[in-house]
Amino acid sequence: MNTYKQKLSLLAEMIAFAIVDGKLHDREYQFLSIVAQELKVTKEDFKNLFHQELIAIPIKSEKQRIQQFYRLALLMHCDGVLHEKEEIAIKQMGVNMGLNPFAIKRILKAMEESPNGMIAPEVLIEIFREQLN
Image (cartoon, rainbow, N blue to C red; front, side):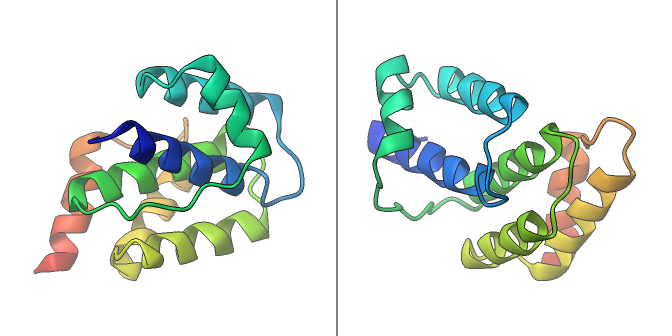
């Protein structure tokens, strides 16, 4: 991740996604808070993201786009409830990021079938690589 503004943009996108079902669950907030800490975003800036609209900054690196998509997918699963609006939104967000729609579907299906809702990083990368060939 290059700049602080890009990190804020990623978090703002995740916050918008978290409330697509109409509410922000405690687990979603906790997950967002952990991501903010990992990105080294201050607590004050993190809290302010819930009250302001930031302009999305496109992610140039494919690796970072895949990483952000996976964060969104983890966020979608963290409250234990999969809403139809979330599924529609994440697929659209993935396509808007320039990710392959077939890979997106495979990732979401693999996560759904996983007992803990997670998949190994190498599996994630391999699914996107397969779609490039």
